[in-house]
Length: 324
Image 1 (cartoon, rainbow, N blue to C red):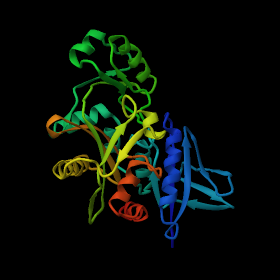
Image 2: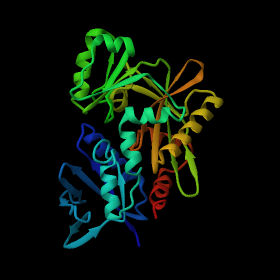
Image 3: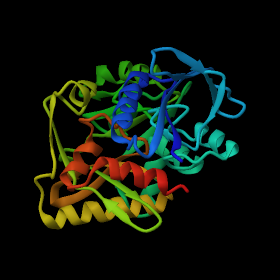
Image 4: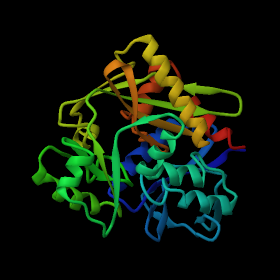
């Protein structure tokens, strides 16, 4: 009998539309001969299933079910592709844990930790992972321009500590830009990171592990046409994404080994993607860990799966079946 899968998308952040695009990608990737698929869209307390005839059916949050032609449909598995809260920060994971519904990605602790960029990087730094100098502000806290320049320097990045897709991010080059950049970042999240600029090659590497295998994908090199890898570079084609990256075999091995180690340190599950900057001397610096990476047809992970000579359908099956 086919398992029934919920592809859970939407969420409550600026990444809502990006999440819906990932859901469509995942829907196209999963083997429909093996699984019955429904896209579940969440926004606040509005949870509904998108039906094939274009209508919507409300989800009963008491047991994560819905009615289809008078028949109650329950889910065997949830593939979470919400970028942002509540799907990337552990909240939805806790709900599914209580509902005893297996899901695709990290558990509560790893999800909550990786969602907070500052906390995650500081945690991994204690395990010897190199990171940029940074400081964090919570809403209501202030910092002077002089302190930013003294402690972090210019240029620097000012960005939300939570969220993704480069919403609220500013590359700050002058003193006059500091306070407006902080205000912009606070519009996206209650915590803001001020992070030193690192000049180097940007790389990203995906990884997933099951009960019986560990898969680290080929590395992608990111060459943005803009000041940094912003929203337009990510989603409007204003960057070159080169897979496999144009780096040495030795550096490739070190980046892949570090990605696998980070996966284990965090106790990750499902597919993660780790972003890096390589600075002078081949030094690997962590940018961030993404535990619900984008999954459109042109996203990094599908690119890396193809470069590895794998079938994305088989990868999706691995992720699902590993939880049973």
